[in-house]
Length: 535
Image 1 (cartoon, helix red, strand yellow):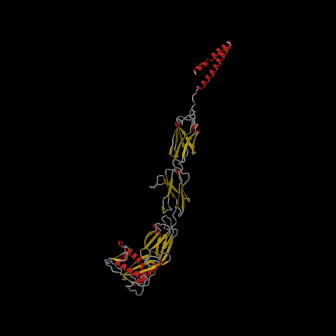
Image 2 (tube, rainbow, N blue to C red):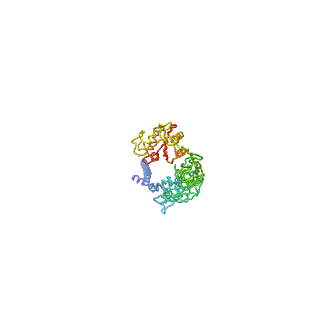
Image 3 (cartoon, rainbow, N blue to C red):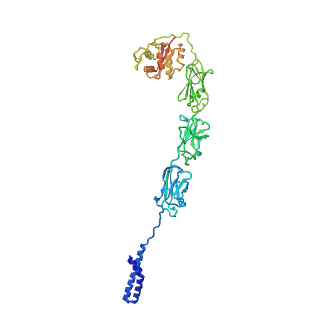
């Protein structure tokens, strides 16, 4: 190739030589000169083509910054106010970069460069959306300070942490219902901007909001206290007002609860019921309410009186504090008119006053007329009752136990004797006139009570048995009469270890006589045993 090039350079000289030869020579010489000249022209053309392929120039730089030249900050659980920095290996044209910057999802941001123009800091003007994947992208074509463009997209990516969680709780709740004097504690997962915090109630209730000081609540908690008691039996919607932000400026997750306040208490009924007569002189009194009641205020609001004079007694409560029970200190007089009353000063446990005062009146049994000649105490036959055989069977069980024996489940008496007590004498008059009629009353009415028509002493006195030494046991079962009275007696006998009331009646030394009554009605078996000492 170098030879061709040299020949090309020599072409002008050779050309002039062959031109002169062409002019001087003959025909043969002129032909040879023409051929030589043509060869030189072709050689020059070939030389020209070879030189074009070897010509080179320095390649122009297209990628001002390769992708690996960027340092991008990528975060997870980023704060709502997080600053995102992007570092460049060389100074950048800030105007160009900012023009090519995009934020997704769209967020208003502020941009700040360091003095070297190699570090760009991106800040949200408010806050990044919580719980959201964000990207900050610089499109291709952004310029270095030298004017060289970038050919690749640059991106920073980060995930913000979720919204600050909140909860609301009523402070005073009884059986699922809020007290009318309740407050509300609002707790947050992270500190909040107190200037944006507002608790609302619907129906609207005004109140104060202050940091909670209770030891058992989170430090980021607040207490909302209504200025006045809430309305009873009302459902309130308690929520956080819109616009609440945490300390980083991010929205707080909304939360709300529905709270129902306790209802207004009212009296359901009194016991004994209003306008009843023939009530036992030792009757226990009670009143039932629709709500659980406060003991102190309700007991203070209660009165039981005869002729305007208050009756002394003691209180107890039952059925989740909805029933007040009053036990008079002394028995009532015969034919006494008793007034029971509860005033509106009684409060429920929710702090709500009784809707209205209530009262009831009843009358105790009249004084019985005593026969001019009291009936004699007799022994022997169980009488002509339909279940006389069952009564006789039970007398044997009773005296087995009383005299130290043990009645077995088969009805036999095991090891009788040893107590030193006398066997009880069956009194026909008590059986016929007191025990059996009362057993019939209980069986036919389907009840089991010592006070269905006065107390046992009242019934004995009405029949002419006026001694103050008496006692009564009841057995209330169903099915076979013999098995029923046996089961009742086994139960009475089982009270021996703790000296239960039935056991004490059976084993009381002072008693000498007993009346037994058995009656069966619709499968219901009632056993009445009246113990007596005719002093």
